[in-house]
Length: 385
Image (cartoon, rainbow, N blue to C red; front, side):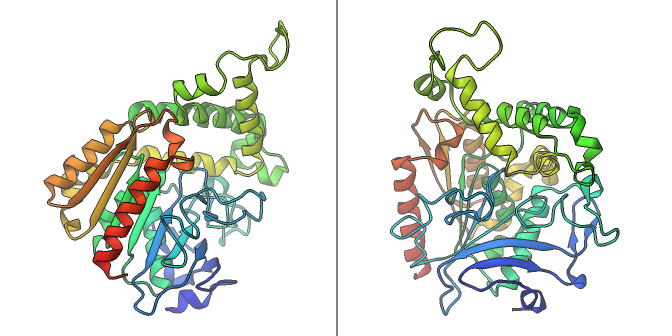
């Protein structure tokens, strides 16, 4: 480990913590800015083997965090992927050393807009530089290096996590043995940018946003963030799932003849919004959604996606999509697979039939479990694990 690892407090190879990088380890950003005093909050499960060949990096989605398979100490909620990471599951800590870090720009311990700017001693707020998916991956690579890991057995993620997987394959293919991209896309579509803009405008229209300086004012733009969450959450579900779960069922007997939550689906969205504003920072939401909007993996390669993967021919890929996902539909996963094939990469692909929509990778989906088990069993055999 290098001097950055020595700054970890508290941290070990069995629990994680917050890794604090020294001044000489500033994070270079795509915008041209440098992020000084970088901190990366991360969690680990299992132990790194003697050959240091069993490390798996899990990349989280937009509003998730590093607590992939353990109770979040802030919210008390269970790990967000504890049906994939755990004993006897596709990512078993008895076999793998599993690492998950909060992305740069996040609000669960990694440096973000709520962090203290070392130059001013006050929260960054909107003085925080805009970050990209590539910046998030660059920070993860710094963490992995600090943990003494030269090559990851696998990098895996869904949604925004899947985009990070693709960025890893483009930028650090020499550090990967395998890569699993679930429910993602090689670029953010105009429709998705539009949904994000609705959410950002809802936050910025809240009087308590205060131009991003709400922390100093002792307030939070909860109403705006709640609306942003409701709009986004609709995109994570499918029409079939909403109909199956709620239909037009009323919340109580009869109509209110007003604007209370008459329908169960309205009550559900309000509940999702309330629980979200208790655990997430509004400025982080602005920054992370913007990072997603800027994501276009082919953009640096004259619009030719295959060129992004030219150096990744030695990586084993698994690309998975969901039939009812309209946020990142299967057609976009097929674009990824075609580009991998054109680049000469080894790639397996499966569309999982489900009516659960984009969020299917969080839910009980046996086809997904089988696909992950099969891929990791094959890759582990090839890796000699």
